[in-house]
Length: 146
Image (cartoon, rainbow, N blue to C red; front, top):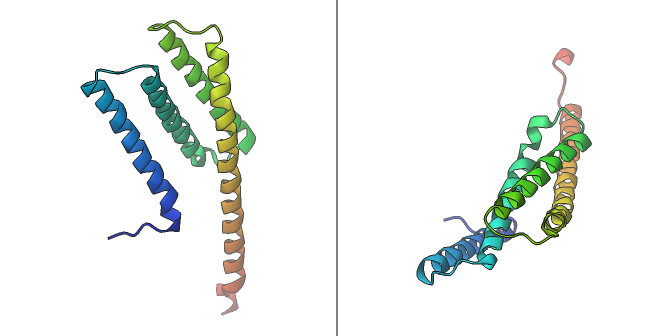
């Protein structure tokens, strides 16, 4: 049996919370026949979170390229998806006149903050790995010295 340690605690809470929220939305839609803006917003947040996480997780594919252009390209792709989602929802419901601006800021502010945290932690991990590699190279005897 796997114990929930310090490192697993927050991710475990997040998974449980997500599953409970989804269950609540689905049960309200089925049992109470209640599906409204609140449920739609929660599902939109989940979808955008999944999409942003997926895009950020593909960073390793572009590790040979400079970070800033890759991060900007990722953001442009994601904000394009947000605007497309907003436009698609406008086909089914009437949008507020400021809907595109509101969606832009509602996505951009949390994304920039969380992406910055992700990239800083990624750079710190890379520096740590480089230090360990340097340490191992210094500690290991060379084959040519034997």
